[in-house]
Each structure stands twice: as structure tokens, then as C-alpha cells.
Length: 134
Image (tube, rainbow, N blue to C red; front, side, top):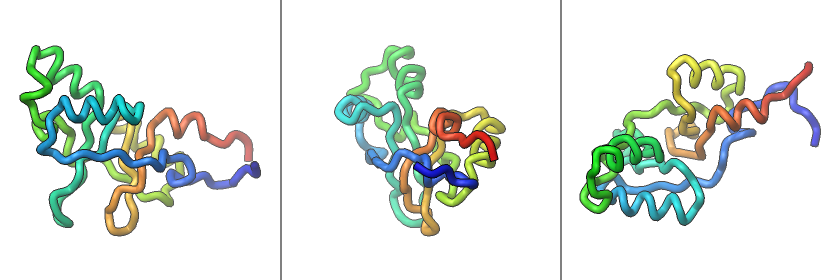
């Protein structure tokens, strides 16, 4: 594998997109997360004017389980983050790291020029994929 001089977010993002509708229950979200062994799901946009959302295991833990709410009675839209930070796939990873750190978040949704989700990038992906040397 040859080292690139400029690594982009698109080079390192997870390309598998697992998404859910905001009206789905948290129980359905948990099941989908288990099925695909992921800790976050993109929440679909309702239409082209809407923004994507994100539901993360920590949202479920903090807002449902810790509050003793039933996952079968809480909808994803009630606990998701929206809007979420979105990054273009051609952004340099050094800038992406700075943005995630500035906002103290662990992940962002990578989008194309039409703002359609392409994948998720995590701080872990960015750090582990960081090219050393020049």
C-alpha cells in the first residue's frame, strides 16, 4: 500500500451505512446495532430540506436506559442528535480531527456534494489512519 501525501476523510471513513427512520423505536435501533455490530446509526432525512441525524449507543444509555424508560416506547427522534456535523469526503483528515476535537465529538457523517450520507468517520478512524512522516 502506497502512502498518500494527503489523506482525506473519504479514504478512512467506514463505508457501510446503517440507517434508521426517526419514527422507529429505540428497541428497533438496538436490534439493528446488534445485527451489524455498530455503535451508531444515521437517522434518515425526511426530505431534501431536512438534515441527517445520528443515534449513538451513549444516547440510548443516557436518555433511555439510565432514565428507566422502555426502549419499546421511545422513538429514535426523541433521543437522536440533529443536526450533526457533516464533512465532505475530500476534506483533509488533519482538518477533520480539528473539527471533531473543537466540538468535542467522536464522529461525523461524511456526505457527498448533494449532502447524501456516504459513511461515518470517527476520531479513532482518523487517528489510526493518520499518515506519519512527509
